[in-house]
Image (tube, rainbow, N blue to C red):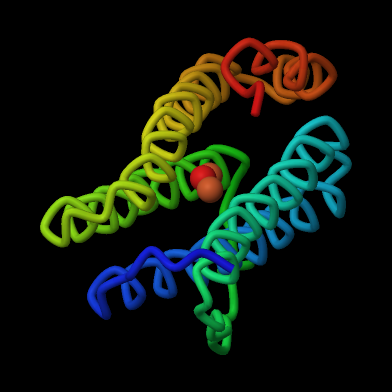
Length: 171
Ligand code: FEO
């Protein structure tokens, strides 16, 4: 276990963010279910993988806290939104979640800067870069769903969405 001190403000922010990541996993699972029920199997698969990635993100923060002798506190997760109106609504929901997540990551980084917590700053460098990728695939998904103007083109997009977004989403 590390003996590098960690400020209460940084613990609080890391705890908040790890629960946010778990909430994102829950929300992506809900998007995956919504898509699967409507036979958008490509989107369902993409969102299911995204749920797994969000759990990995939470795990990175959990490992960091544990290594520094802090017990992470898991909060109750809010029920995710499931009453989506359309595939575009689902894509916009993903985009709104990632934009909120970027704000959360920035808040952790600012707390780590203020506390001169270098290990937490370096941990957040990974997340800051990750959010560039996350916001890129969201924007591309929104653009592509908007461009698919009929049921046939949405079905075609569904078949190829994972390949289309593979360059943005590598983590
Ligand atoms: Fe954990 Fe979608 O970023």
